[in-house]
Length: 113
Picture 1 (cartoon, rainbow, N blue to C red):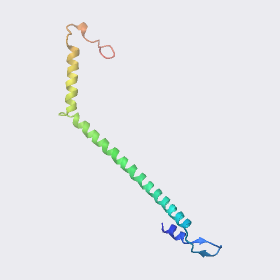
Picture 2 (picture 1 turned 90 degrees about the horizontal axis):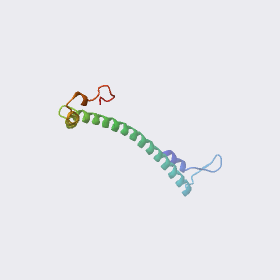
Picture 3 (picture 1 turned 180 degrees about the vertical axis):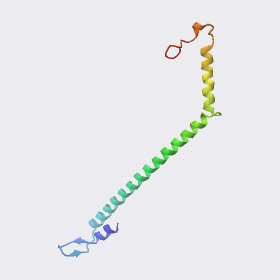
Picture 4 (picture 1 turned 180 degrees about the horizontal axis):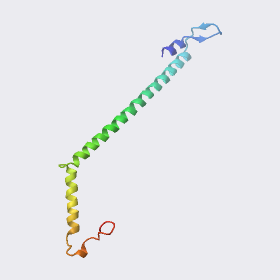
């Protein structure tokens, strides 16, 4: 940024002479150039932080999901109890009312029905 401010103090007159003219056009040029450099740097910083943040968030979300699923499907997990109860209801419902071998599913069919 210092380079931009320093360059604003010099405007070229003749080929070998420097003059210290500092007018509004020079000021606006310096401010806009410095602003574009700062915004570019800010954009790069935000992109790097965003990429790192997303990577960390993705890893932590995967770990949390895996831990929660293991907890729910464990011996005392609520989801495991719900699944076991539902499977028992389905098995009991499909087996009720069958009194002969003819009524049992065909073991050679694709789904055993």
